[in-house]
Amino acid sequence: MSSQDDSREKAQKALFDVEDYSLTGRGRTYTPDAKLLTATKEYTIEFKSKPQTKSEFSTARGFGAAKAQEWEDKTDVFVFSEFEGTDFNGNFTEHYALTYDDLRPIIEDKVLKPYYEGRKKYLGMREWEDVVQPLLNSLPEDMINRIQYTLQRGTSLNDPKFPWAYIKEHGTHIKTAEDLKRFCLKRTIKDKT
Image (cartoon, rainbow, N blue to C red; front, side, top):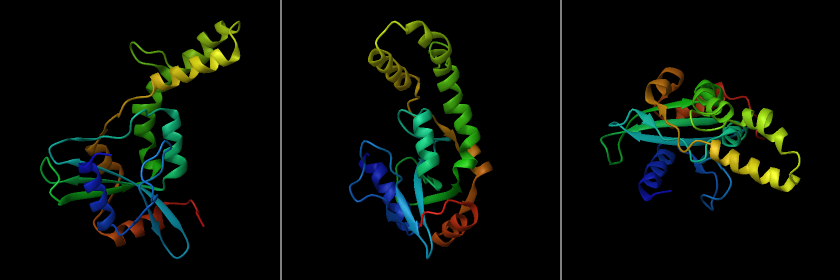
């Protein structure tokens, strides 16, 4: 994570009074950014931020079915924050909290549809499974698995963007740590105790 992204994330964590999810930082597997502890539950939080000068949020590298499943399985709440200007100066303008269910329509449209159905010059995973893979039965299973892995990586999108307008329309406006806590208690159903 770049130092600029790190400073924004640290500011979001401080504002919303949450703890680091992992003390070791980023790794090879997905982990949410933070956790919010209540008397009975632990909520996992993913933070995203963008400058006022942009109309979309960056999401993740290699975003395909596996990453979407990780987001759904491992993250209770996504907080999208907008900050003043172009370079982060410590001041946020707005924040919205969403669950995976709130994000599901855009993930299905911008991530899963091209992943499974393909794009203009790219094969989709359904074409692979329905058309190509049956033609390869004479190859060793290990070779087929390697080809499939390569295709899964290639059909994943590199950082699809989520529009700020979508986030505002489908999210809940929050301002404080108490707002985030209320959102978690009201909108999430996963019991992590």
